[in-house]
Image 1 (spheres, rainbow, N blue to C red):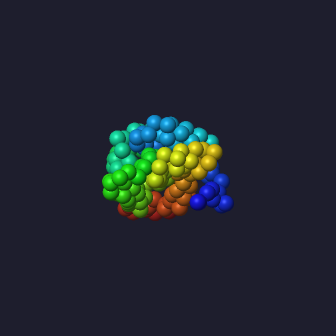
Image 2: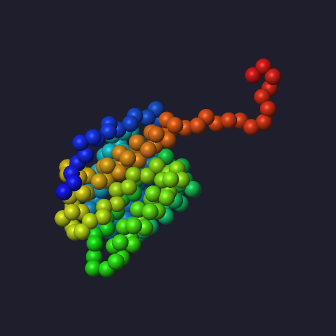
Image 3: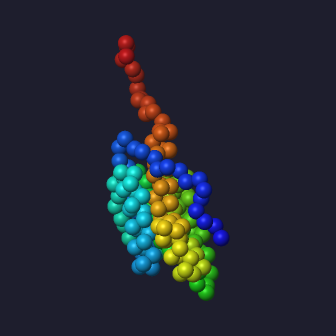
Length: 168
């Protein structure tokens, strides 16, 4: 069984506090509460400002992030939810499509930490949601912060258009 990484990066520091949107599908109440608490602790420890948006299910998480990325002023996103395998192939669709949507948004420049838990049973979900054990939500918040830091650090200089006045 996989455990905690032995190579945990320190949280980045910021001159200007990043603004992060947590998008959560609160399908399982206790799991969602633990995820939100953990993500918020990590974001606040780095000085990030955050807001939370609830969506009906994990399939809607990437869509909501895409809307926010196009229409709002967030530096990054934390995707949270929990998908527990059932008796049908719906699990595979939700797991694969939510991950694909998040990855696609990331490749277009959205800084997203993916903390959607995908498990076989409630015991595994509880372990992954628990901040003292596997803490996937805290890890997702940290990932979003690292991506925001990378984006800010590697930002290209803006270049003007037109002519420069002589002597400038």
